[in-house]
Length: 476
Ligand code: SAH
Ligand code: SF4
Ligand code: F3S
Image 1 (cartoon, rainbow, N blue to C red):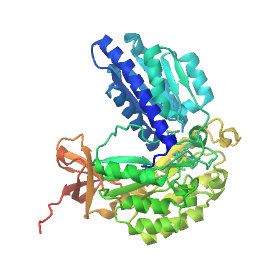
Image 2 (cartoon, rainbow, N blue to C red):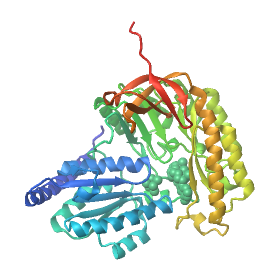
Image 3 (cartoon, helix red, strand yellow):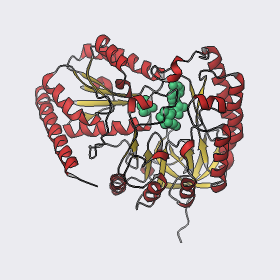
Image 4 (tube, helix red, strand yellow):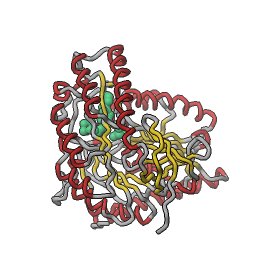
């Protein structure tokens, strides 16, 4: 990885802060007479999940034992999401429960970080009404977590540090991965697109791309550590590199990632349709380790609504893009994000969304009810769609997606494909994994197969997933 004197200094500082927190925790551990446990809870997207792996890595480096059981934790940290109102509500609800836990265990430390903390009104409310929360930091200063942790462990009083923005990217944070065999890899942070409904650019700041050498170095390290599948992460990976002096862009980065020794599968998200180039399609089609799955949020099937959403493409642009992608990769899996009930959406606009879903034949879709986010342009528009209409449309969309996805997913029935086994199924004797197209398959297997690529015949499609059986390969 690249190391200049500034990043060396940064790393020394980080280590110093970790050591300081470690010392403070050792003292508390001696006082308690047992190891102290931390629990990190993640809300939101893949990027938050990756951030949580860093937070967990820091906790481990400081000497905490990791636990998923909040009721036995000494330190609970919520990494929050604010993309829709219900994400916020969920956190407030759980803070109520933590207030109860704190009564039973007065030594408990509760912290909040992530996207919600970048909203002033949220932080004001928590300061005032949720005394249980003693540590707050935001998305821009995640790397200051060791310093803040040291402070709260030593001083036991409220610690709040929030930044308005940042142009920095801090490398070399410790990481504790959730899965041994797969990992996310950040390639860029922030977003410059300002879709009119979306809070992300306000809470994640301006777009910044990571240096390609750092990214590829991390992928090599992950491969050496047993990772077989990586997912390149960014709010709009297709604009990767625009903030860098190097001329490297996403298709080239993707090609290099795909050719890393030991990496069997490469995925990426998210692709904004407006910036998806023919070069990217060519790279996807020609590199066998790049998975034939594209998450391509459309948001709406109506050009009029897309314009109001500030998406910079029309319905026809999207459909043409889909046909270019399919002529290069005929059996590719496509999945969108779709919003229902955006301000000003009429029955005609909504009908266009339904018809687009039928026309494209997505493998599945992430569907969302529009949620008003204060601070975004659409939040103050007058033509808000009433709840009942929005819910009714949402249900119709779900049904349309279900019918069209059932048909699309069945195209692999009878074929044998490689499944990367991810976990044991709840049903005894079964394991679950994914084919390159990202569809889930359940088949009889054992937990020893987790992390392995196994050839599986896709016996029966059950809507969004398959039931299969392992195929024994004849040895030559
Ligand atoms: N950067 C990605 C999306 C990140 S947010 C992209 O542009 O594709 C994930 C999804 O949440 C979005 O695609 C959108 O469908 C949904 N979303 C964002 N803001 C929303 C809002 N205010 N209400 C409902 N859904 C929203
Ligand atoms: Fe939000 Fe649009 Fe940026 Fe995606 S591209 S994060 S939807 S503003
Ligand atoms: Fe949510 Fe923040 Fe991701 S708002 S969707 S966690 S970038």
